[in-house]
Amino acid sequence: MSNLIIILISVFGGCIAFYVSHNLGKGPVYGSAIVTLLSGVIFMLLEHFGVSGSAELAIVATTASYAGMASKKYVMNIWQMAVVGVIAGTLYVLSTNLFVGIGGRLGTIAAVSCFAFIGLKKIIYAKFPRLMKTEDISL
Amino acid sequence: MNKKLIVIICSILSVCVTWYINHTIGLGAIIANGLVGMIAVLLLPNDLAGPIYTSSFVGMSSMVVIPSFLASVLSGLIVGILIVLTPTIYAGIGGKGGTTAAISTIISRLIYGIIG
Image 1 (cartoon, rainbow over the protein chains, first blue to last red):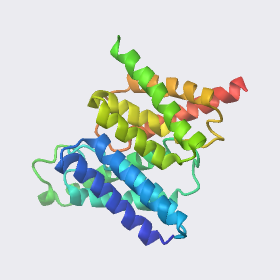
Image 2 (image 1 turned 90 degrees about the horizontal axis):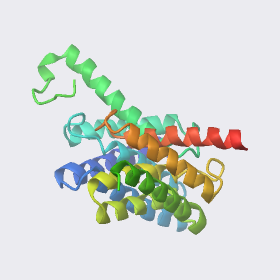
Image 3 (image 1 turned 90 degrees about the vertical axis):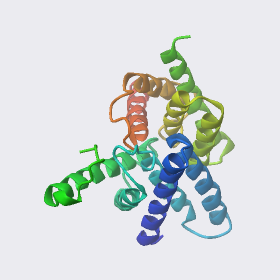
Image 4 (image 1 turned 30 degrees about the vertical axis):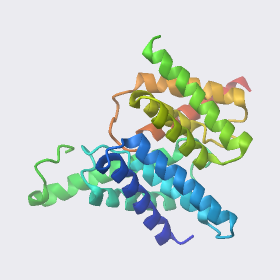
C-alpha cells in the first residue's frame, strides 16, 4: 500500500477520533474505539472482497485513533491533530517490522507521535514566539 | 470492593475477552479491540472504560506472544497492576495506554520465558 495513502488514512483516523472525543464530547475511549471498530469492519470487508492492503489501513487508522485520544492540553485543535496524524503515519511506515505481534505496539507509536509533536511545537515556538497561543499550556 | 482491585479484575477480563475474540473467534485484533472498547464505554463509567480499553491492547498480541488463554489471564493481571500503579504518568498523552500495554506484554513475555 502506498505510503501516501497510509499517511492520509492516519490523518483521517486521528482527526475523527479527536473530533468525536473533544468536539462531540464523547470522550477519548469512545472516540478511539468507534474509529477502531469501524475501520476494522470496513477495511477487513474491503480486504475480503479483494482490495489488497486494506487490512493494513485498518491498523494505521487504529494507531492514529490512539493518538487522537490526546487531551486538548497537548493537542489543542483538529489541525494540530492532523500534524500528529502525519507523524503517526510516518512512524508507522518506518516501524513496520518492529515489535510485530506485541500488544501495545500501535499505542506506543501513537505516544511517540504525540511526544514528537510536543517537541516540534516547542522548537517552533522557540524560533517564532509570535506564533505561540496564550491558551497553549502544554509547553 | 476496593477500586484498585476492581480495575485489576476488569483488566484481566478485558485481556481475556479481547484475546478470545481475536484468536478463538478469529475476528482479528483490530475488531476485537474496537468491540471491547465500545462495550466498555457504553456500559461502564469512564473511570473503568479507560483501563479496560488499555488492557484490551494487550489482548491484541499475536499467538507467539500470548500463546494461551491462561497466559492472557497473567498478562491481564500484569497490565492491571501497571495501570493501578501509573495513573498520573503522562496522563493526556495519546498512546499512553498503548505504551503501558506494550510494557506489560514485554514483562509477561519475560515471565513466560522464565516459567517455560
